[in-house]
Length: 138
View (spheres, rainbow, N blue to C red):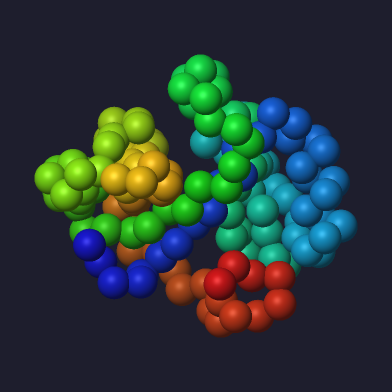
């Protein structure tokens, strides 16, 4: 896996309007629509996207997943990381797939069941500045 290049967070929820209102008031984040053709909203700090918000996918809900945050961790190869995670006792929750013009991702769970995603961007990702600033993930 790559070491600390990029991390992204998605909130998957059953009520995106209530989640937007809550986190905007709590954190001061803004939102902007993603022009990728899906119902997806990006969290922003100023003009900088820092994460996303989407309806909890039906397939996740059907597997018993409650509303949750999902961390995306950059890796040099999603497919190699999936193979490595499975070899170490992890489980693939969503097989590797491409996000057109953005990159490739998969959703995994560690042997104890904690879910996370791995991501390989199509292009190098711009730095996000100081992640320890107020309102940003750390």
